Length: 282
Image (cartoon, rainbow, N blue to C red; front, side):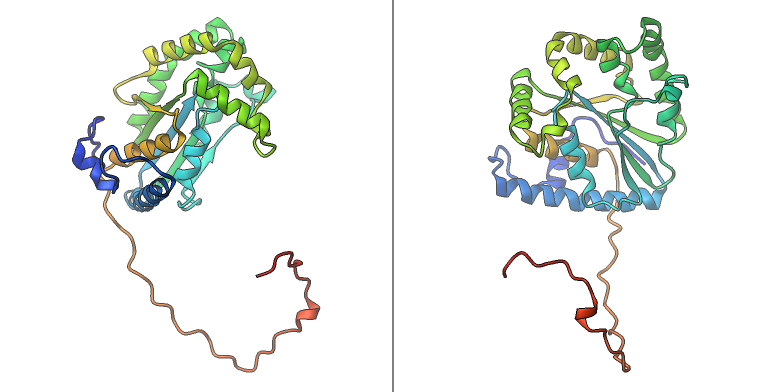
């Protein structure tokens, strides 16, 4: 598998996009473009299965930066048997005694699979560092070990892609307030999210240090400007597609065979079945 350069030229952009340069991203244009990109993602997944690749995509960034929304748009048309999202909870007491990377290793992909980490081992470089959940020795060991750990993954044949979703403090504030006002989103706002507002500068310093140690040639960080969620999703998918020289292996349209003839089968009366009540008129 060949990788394209980080900086795509115009031809690369036009490969996946029907949007003229500098066209306003209206709702109609957004959904049209998203549809085009999701079709390409399906093609990419078929190629990954065919070539038996092992792909890991890491999504990191500040709280409310839009990581989850991007992951959802990437995976919603993919086959969940071969593309899965990993979003681990707080480590258990047993996991805290393990080698730090151990609980993440169990989720790495087999051949033909894509694994998307909604936050990853980089928790140690972010929230654990800032909130004091790890010791200074553990943190320094993480900075030393992570580049070698990731080089080892790449040498083993894993394609490792790392995205950092960057959001301004003003936009994060607006999204936090939106979560407070919307009962369906309120669960997204944890006490840890609120605490992060008080330590904005500390998180920025921690991110800078993390990049300085882990932005390696074998697995560089790709930064996504996430102040505009829709643009961030499209740009991220554009970039992800550009990393793979994949081919279109879409199967030919299937011709449905004729349905079996009714050879005397009698369906049970509807009254014998419990139907969900219809609350809506046509």
